[in-house]
Length: 171
Image 1 (cartoon, rainbow, N blue to C red):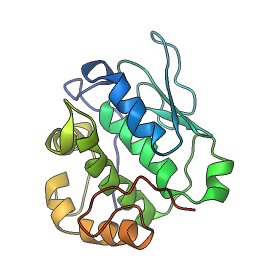
Image 2: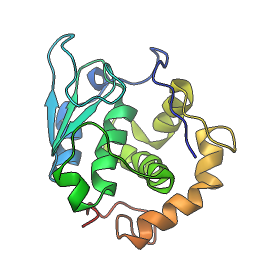
Image 3: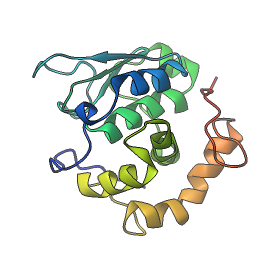
């Protein structure tokens, strides 16, 4: 089980540190529209509140100060939920523990699709932000209990046998 503490430190990579075009392209592959909220406006659909990313329907909301790992995490919630839940999506993904772990695993894989971010930075930022795993840090989890999350993703066709994203969503 993962626990996320939403008051992480400022040193994590933010949307301002990457190309928004790259993040938009990744989201579009899943039929999600990335909306960058101006200034310090509230982030629609943010479960934890700003600067965390938010979800409403197929719209992923973020600001320039939103952590990249948060943007990917919320995108992965959209990908991992079924179509019924996706159709009614408003802030809370309502997933179970297995799905939450799959979301975390997929966000790490998708980090490589975002130049100037990548898997290593995503894992570091997850640790810095306060993700908590039974094995300790995010890397240890990925190699330990993460195997269960990998299986969850593989069984649903969200990754291939080499753990590469298929850019499909749960039906």
